[in-house]
Image 1: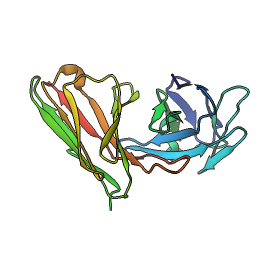
Image 2 (image 1 turned 60 degrees about the vertical axis):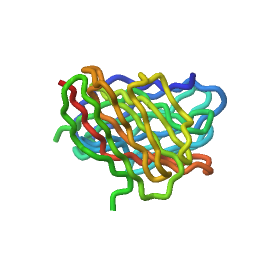
Image 3 (image 1 turned 180 degrees about the vertical axis):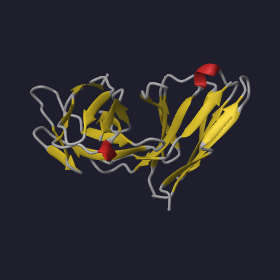
Length: 112
Length: 114
């Protein structure tokens, strides 16, 4: 079935460091791809999305580009802040149109 | 105004008990979901309802029974609770008909079975 695989965490970075969280997908066709973020004690929130190949989603300084040739949707940020500490989930939309399949989440801790 | 609200936020109970978690959304969405997040943060879909009809029923024990009295509500009833049911349960909603609708999540119900 359709699925995403993302890098294991936890990831610990110093403030202002560069962030990359890898995500690759397996799917029939060309699914829509998403990054969700979960702050401590909260539900998930959509961070960014891309709907077709070569689309770049961006929000709050985060970016991810839909790469069909490598079936990837890596999340990047040029300079992380302490407030970015959270768990990040890569997800794809089911080909049936309902629900999302999530990766296992990558915990990010940014230290001052 | 909370878009997706679920109650209770915490639920501590004994093995063998029956419990319910309620979820309501005020976004006018037509689809609602229950996801289970385990201790390692892995998030897995359990059920989905579209316009009160069950459309997704993943491999979940039949001790779990969702009920959708109307489009704005999706409740989860769990019979004969087991230790392995301990997790955070998230309700979510979305609106179909758009190509890439996003999910709106509640803040979760942390269930602890003792």
